Length: 273
Length: 101
Figure: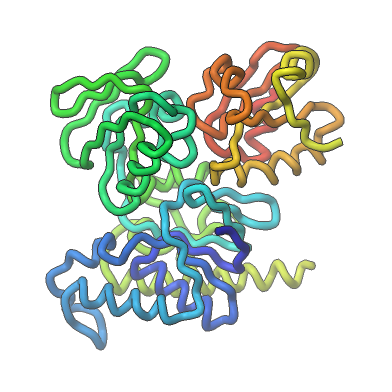
């Protein structure tokens, strides 16, 4: 799958869905890169009591929002976004082994994830990878470790086994330490050592800095203007990834604002031409 | 000129002189497909001064191994055959220009 949209939204939580619906209302074509609704933080909320007009459990509200997205004209892209980068007049996004392009991208990836392993960032690209479908082939016939959970991780584990890797699997829980000299060769899990040729860390969401190289952040939080603009032209952000308060109403509101700003930005591009 | 596809037969001769940037890539990799158009733009802008090249790691795993490519895309810049910089993951045009010094 590949394609071109006016607006590509990374994240299918409240901010991403609100942004998608707003952009569709403004006549834009919209792609949404989304994990299943159950992976949204909202899903775990027992009761939402401060959203105007609706109340219920987090899972009920999240499912209703997701249905609204499914019923809309937006294209839902299932999978993990790996990289977002300006390509001159458009912004590109890599999702698994697919590639999409849009005039504007809205990052709505939810609460920021810090590295989960000691040594993860320093060994990235040297025996640590975030993308099994990208780098798996380089390790055919070798031993690799996968740290991760969820449907995406399962399908990646299958993929690695199919291409002939010996795969050690670990859930995201536990204490992980990555060791090596010029490259990672040992994974320590709760004190036990495993020798591996590559460690795949498959998180549902990458940190903002890993996802969008060069994006301005402060302690993992994306810096935005009130209009949802980031420091990168054509890249906007909304919801929990832009910081506290981590509230449904704030996320939905920011998604709406970022989409309107992105629409204006796209209209100004068309005028320039 | 356009982006040059390297093979085991011309890798050393092409990289041995002048400024060269090589994108180690493969078809199955989404981020590599994003790197492609960026390389095309780079070639258009500075192709007269720099050889902009790609190497398919699936076809030439031995060369990838020789340069310690463990993750793709990996970009390596050479001056007169000597490696001057290396970067892992998709690189913007500006980052690529910076890699060439």
